[in-house]
Length: 255
Length: 290
Image (cartoon, rainbow over all chains, first blue to last red; front, side, top):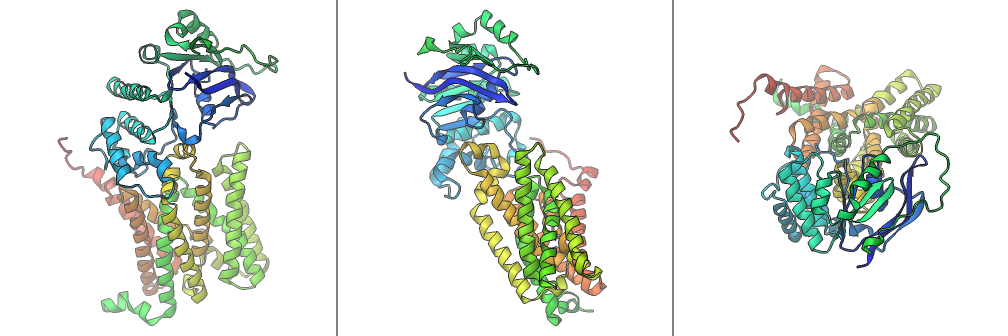
């Protein structure tokens, strides 16, 4: 199993304060990894850095992927939920890689979009305006769009927040399905039981990498306590970080 | 007075009324859809700011041409409007100011500068014309300019419809698929400024957005889908133009403000009687079983 996406001593800062601090390791191709950690641990920041929305202050990301290989579901997507657009048209945006800005969606794309809607349990919702959907239904629509995107690497940032148990289970089934197809899935989660039950690998983050490897080993009481201790520290008087590579940690366990 | 006298004679008898009507219909077709997108992007007030930004450029054009020449003022207005749009974009990206804050600063500067420049040379009458427009004085070349801007607007909107919708609806998604959102945003701002320049002579800088935002608000109250909203906005603007001109002719009112007031009346009625309107709240219908 080869490294698909490598973090090499990655540091991402806000206003020079590190949110992700000297993290090293790699995601295997076809792996299903949870990124866990307390609030303020830099989980979403790491996702944004992987998507290229934030530039590393130090270190780098190494991969041979192009932008359209990624499918990304941000945490608080700045989606205008009152926009007058139908469920079908929302899902069809997922065909962007094939249609681009100008090419028309053909019968093939429409059939595929209807198929993904059926797969997320929203068959027959095509013509509904998105404004009429519940939060759970809307999240299903976003998963349908991701399905249509057909991405190699799928990044999910807190995908099950404010979603009921049944919808979460249905969406977790889709995640498992992606994993079965050999796609690489990385999901930010805060529900420890969910991570243990559904994600074979975990990156436990508290700005620094606490542990990275098989979930059972990573989510040990000791590691979890360590992560909690590191949480939400913003030192106004912090000096300049001297260590060239910090406590470089690696997920050699799974390599 | 027959229906012909009331509704058709003003346009049959007078060339300036005919030109004013054609100008209104063109403006309606271009500004209506643009207004809907402005509103969906939550930039309604930004449109207002942009219209003021056009003023100093138009004033310089007026100063150079020495008269109310729409070509000179149009070019000046276009340059000034685009500069303000670009500059405020740059300022909001480079500083902590949000785009609306930097827009507000630029447009207040522009308004002051514009009035100052016009008052350097012109009379108060000229100033009034610049601020409130002279739709009844539109000549052939001005009409050609307005018509061209409308054509360009409609063609451009048809071409960039999908990326523009994606950028309004979910800019984050467009970014992840490499959709060049800022390009379409800039193109859209260009269309806004172009339409400001078009409605500038007809309605003046202070009311140029009137035929953009009021019809868009009406459309949002009635329309469920984006296509319906765009059609409704254009239709509302066209009806306002026609009814406003007829009313101003018979009642001897200033035409520009009458057109905008007509749109305002339609807006008021919509607030009362649209599906989400006040009347529905006072007289609720029984809810459905499922």
